[in-house]
Length: 543
Image 1 (cartoon, rainbow, N blue to C red):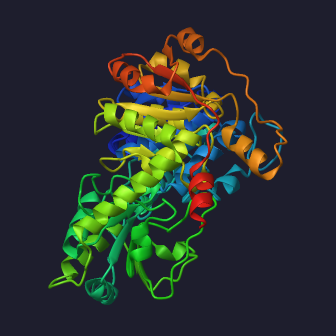
Image 2 (image 1 turned 135 degrees about the horizontal axis):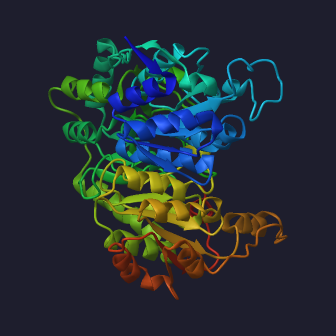
């Protein structure tokens, strides 16, 4: 036991848990905590220009490293500004710790109109976090932070929120750091594993679908070993990209290609950390004869729209390893290497025919970037096509916004990814509708030396909205046009580098040059109006 302040115990516990950086926006209700970070010296503080972007940086950091991302903000408007990012982290199963200041403890509950007062703020965060807590006294801080960290490290990784009234930061008490209780991995029931192994062993066309839970568990090795043992192709959701290398003979491409032919051919489907959520306006229905095995941490929290024949409600890594061991003896899979290769070739040809410009851009990008590059794709046309067409070498290398689909998330998320992975290239795919959401963070990027590359595709419109209005509303265009700045001058005004291409065909060369730059780079790529994948592929396939 030692006499220590609330801010000091918080910083000491974060340091012990390996936290390297805190993203936030300073202000009165958290200044004691920021000063404690400064005095301790072991944790980097990065100030942002908006609370939402602070939380998105924490999301990008966590999503690409597997470590805890931490954001710290003021209460009331500051905390509410983070909700889109915290909601994204929730839907994408990502461990983000949001530390929110609060008004003084002696004002709570009295509705006196104190600065930034939002007494029931915690009730809002309970809808988008795994756990939320508020300290009533300084002695509560270590125990509550221990609970928060325990939730972040146990089971499904999702965000948590801790509120600390700002008078408690400076108060001192005899406190020690409690051990963070991390529950052991939930083991699968042997009888269910045996049933699943029997189904898969007898399957003629087994298929593995790798989803966000595979990324969260970091189970690429387990996925590949199970696929090889079973001789089953693997398809990946956008959030499960990188679970099996692009060149592996059992890589059958992406699940969301409405739908991958391998999915239709399968008789037994093993969904590893996936809800089997279809994208866009597509639908997904299992045939009566298809059987579904789902492996998910705490699958009881997920309402499946599909019939689930076997639910393995346990730790994904442990379950897959146990399942692989249970698959002793011969298997009945009749998949041939040439069939899987043909599926990928057909998918590629289909994409090339549907979107030649988008595929040329993706090929130029992927052909230029090294295999360890991280790509963050915003809610934009080239992002949609990258979601289904861009090869990914390893887990945690492709980041999307999951089903929250938050426009403008990508740039700040990429900044956090680069902070967490300083030696890996980080590239952002943005449109001119989404990039301005967080474009002031270009100042943060320059100030903090975060040399990300922004591929900014401009058509001077909300392109998806334009397409909807053209197809469904008789060309009555309302609110779809955008007036853009000169993005070369915009970048240079912040001290970054701006490049404008005259054609997308120049992208490979300019991107190669940008990889060697020591500053953030915006490469503006003007494009014509483009169709989305679901409008193009679904309308032509009739599905």
